[in-house]
Picture 1 (tube, rainbow, N blue to C red):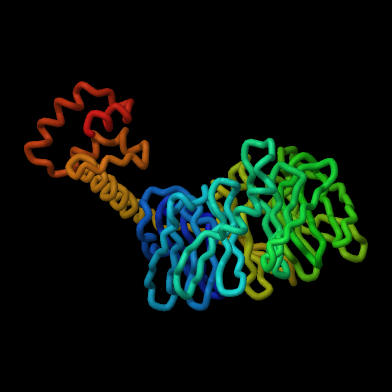
Picture 2: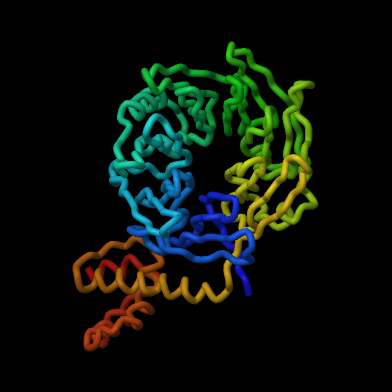
Length: 404
């Protein structure tokens, strides 16, 4: 029996899809002529059980570069020879996650999820990682006084050597020239920002508190477009996708894909997904899509978090829609289970006998007694029986304190 795979970072070529899964450390490949995905390799220097290792991947020559979300490293996979290596981001520099990466001059600029952590530069030729201190201080100086719990940069765009950062939940956009670091603040009226894109020097914005779409021209003139959604939800609109010489507006939890009509200066429903298997099977309450990619003229939409339906393939010329399932053979579950158990055994062994007590996963504490039974500890195993007889298995912290 096959099982669907969720992923948060993927790259589509003409013949294959490469992706990092969202609930397991694994790089997979799916051929266009294959029903199931193939497990290629684990990302080195990362735990097997890590959730959402990566959020963004780009192709640089013949190498796929995976930028971390909850992972600790930038991973580079050579598509030709199958080799993989990683460059660590130091903990004091690491953001909670990186949600975008833009190529500038000879390096990539990694955009953090929010104010926690630094902007990072990655040089693919030398595989050097360093903080973009000037950019970090510039952004922080403009946002440190915001009275919101966290500043998330869902909308970030790079256009003509200028970095635009939309601050989620506020009415503020930062425009930063990367040559001089000169910074402008752009504001929208009456609403707070969800996401953003730049098209022909116009800024298009979706809002967290309204169905309206906001357009800010290069001269600063603001235009609002009132849209509607058949589904009542907190945030109906997700993000924009460049399309021909216009834009598509993807739903967050709604049913419709909208298109901007340049001639009539209005938004129109382009595709209704309500009867499409992709919409019917997706996890309700979660974002329908998380990202997109063009391969030639073909558009691929990647599923949102917790949506294991697969990719949506759209052929713009004919408006044909195809759901591409992303799945693996059921037999891989046993291999995955073995990998996870071997790693947990190694962690427990190190914690007990090498003095390296690091509880990275709370599940390890709960499973500690069961895991120890699989480790060949000879006479030590009998001594531990008495220890666990007096400790509640429901309190993993108590177990770990007892074995330090």
